[in-house]
Structure formats: structure tokens, C-alpha cells
Amino acid sequence: MTLQQRIRLARRHAGLSQAAVARAVGVQRSAVSHWEATVGKSPSTSNMRELALVTQVQFEWLATGRGRMTLSEDVAMDSVAAADALLVDDPLELRLLTAFRETPTLSRAPLVEIAEQLAAQRMGRKPAPERSLTERIAATERTS
Image (cartoon, rainbow, N blue to C red):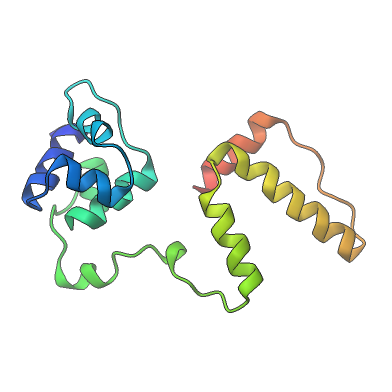
């Protein structure tokens, strides 16, 4: 079964229209249509995660076809990614984390570099050596 077929099956299994899924995920209805098209585009990882949560299917099944489609009772409680849990007590740290998560992927590496440079200046350390844009993108993709 292809990714497009799994997306359509998950949506139908949840009893949702393309428009309802689009609203819940935060995209246009046409994006959902493209995700389900035979030669359509694939959703981003974050959109696929939202799609799995909205349709109540296992993320691994949706992304790869492996595992069970539906959430077991044990997994349903664990379906929120640990990275999305709010374990931050400091309001400023929470603002920084929220802004970082809302930043486009290509802009994240420069933000991290700015924070690292500010921290290095504050602590009297030398800033990290400059990396090329390709290295920064690769590092960002490895952490995503």
C-alpha cells in the first residue's frame, strides 16, 4: 500500500472529509487532495504527525506501512511526541522554544547559531566555528 493510499484510508477510517482533515492539520484542502493523489506530493513530517493524531492511527504505519494501523490503548496515551511535551518551567525558555518550532526549517540553523554565539559571549568562550549552509541544513535535518 502506498503512502497516498494509507493517508486516504486513515482519513476515511476516521470518518473525516478532506476539508475537515485540512482544518485540523492547518493546511488547505487542496494539500490533502495532493497527499491522496496517485502521483501526489507527500506531506511534511510535521503534517504527517498531525494527520496521524487527527485520524488516530499509528504514525509509523502512516509513514511506512509497518506496524498496526490503529492505536492500541497503551499507545493512545503515548501518541504525543516527547519533544512536544511542555517540560519547560522558564517562561522565556518556553517563548524561545515556541518561536523555534514555528520557524521554517531553513531558518532554524541560523537561529541556533545566534543563540550559541550569544551564550559563548556571555560565558567568555569562543564561538563555534562557522559551518557552510549545506552543513547547517544537514545538521538540522539529522535532528528533525
